[in-house]
Length: 67
Length: 486
Image (cartoon, rainbow over all chains, first blue to last red; front, side):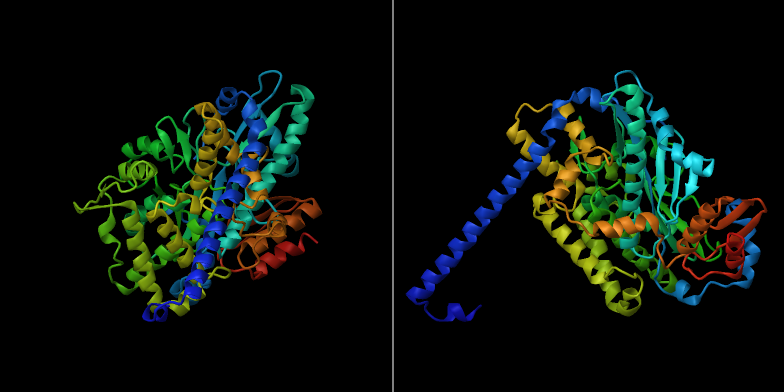
């Protein structure tokens, strides 16, 4: 939006932009929070998987042949 | 290798030339073969995984008297050497259709596994759990595959395709790799480290990555089947769709260049040592800007190389927009290019979390980092376990959790996948195979099939040969065969 740079910005315009910027930041923060909430829920979902004997689980998978 | 030509189909071809639209245009047949790994945990006494795989296939054996059969959706289901359940999708004209068929395969395997698990629990306790891994490496380092098949026009020599496609396939893994937790750190591919031995023992270095097996399952004078074995098995729907779609575009450039007798622009990108480049790409997270040595003596990074292929495809598309737009039935070329571009953008900016909803390795990496944050003392074995769990299509939790919480992009609705479990793609030869299998099962005759043949073996032997994979139109021979099943 080049025209905005061509003329001095009024006070209200500046405030408006700051508000918009703040809104974007809040939004971003909100998204990050949402993301970590989701990741937390996912980790909760897999918690029981991690309670089993991991080494035994991994070592149980031995396949022969293929390709 | 003349023995590779379907002897029974040669004479038929002489009277049925391949339609020029298929030879001159860019349409293609896609197929995906997926080998699954089987393991059992929670049993109250030792149990043999091979035996479990046999139990999974019991319903197939009682239906077909064999562990190798074709389903009503036109796909092939079989038990491979070493007790690998394997599923090969029916012929698809579009990467989305191939994806639907591949996901149908997951469903078929899951159903077989859960039935076998119920039976297993009668003898091995209520906690016996069958794991069916759609991955490529077991705990002992045995690698197995996910193979892509592309029908390509025979006028392009296989050497040309191998030579020009391999650098693309190796660097494609930046967004199609499934990722793997190794003692050497987290790698973006499953088995770059395991293709080594095969590479050193082969006469041509690229052979084990792009197989030269030449059974076209089609008119052998017009087509060959390119068998790509370097790819990982994907859980991500986007990744399965994307690897087929982008590879299609690159193949179109190679085919057209050969048709016109012009260079494709890919000649100069051959790696000096493909296996070494493959290992370096797999360690992309450690060294994203690793310089890969080319046969020409120059060096290039994996991302730069992908950008070169992208640019070549982009300029090719400007000249062939119309013919290319009809090459795929259900995927827009602009969509593929957009996805390709944005994936490369995110990689260039090291914004891997931006890809966590569509790139398998990025999805795993994001969860692993969150887990390490929550449990700083998480063990290597636990991460390995979680990584396997992601690939377990029978009892895995991680991938299901990611999709339920809308953290993985879904390209297909559940009912589209369910549809593909029963129905073959409607616009290829698979439609005819599907009809035949369904009718043969309903009438109770003994039958057999392969990609080009449909046979009633008893009470009276009768056969139909389907040479054109692009055609869903019943031939007189096919109708006559179907008449015997009424």
